Image (cartoon, rainbow, N blue to C red; front, side, top):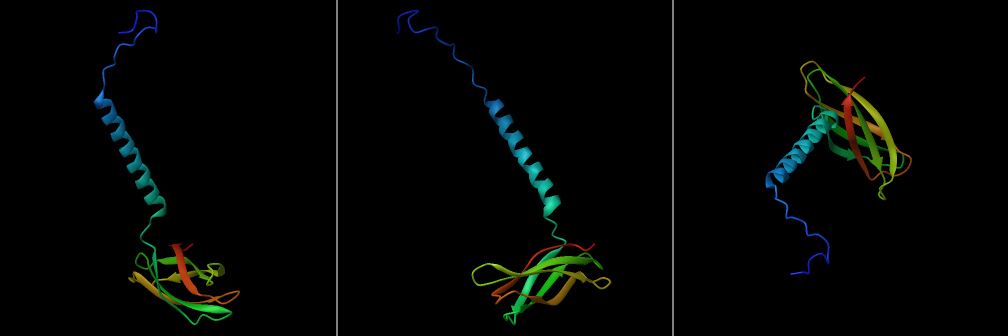
Length: 131
């Protein structure tokens, strides 16, 4: 034992509260789920889902991009297409608006994208509802 009064007053041991830790963890998980759902509703709309089928005819001044977009029946989408060179630099960009026929859910289209120099690949970065 330490001599009394020499090293200050000893603290009384605190009771541990494991339920408090469990409640805090549950609140943190719940907050994470709320944020996830909110961000998904803002940015994760799977209704407008683009897929590149092929990109061909890459020349010094353009590339041919064939892609499909899933839209609501009879809807329209505006898609951002771009081309990249072999070093990863963006060499062409364009917005393409496509419209579905009545009852159609998948739109397939081909777009000739002009480029500043030789393109290596073509991609569709995102699609959104057409204005």
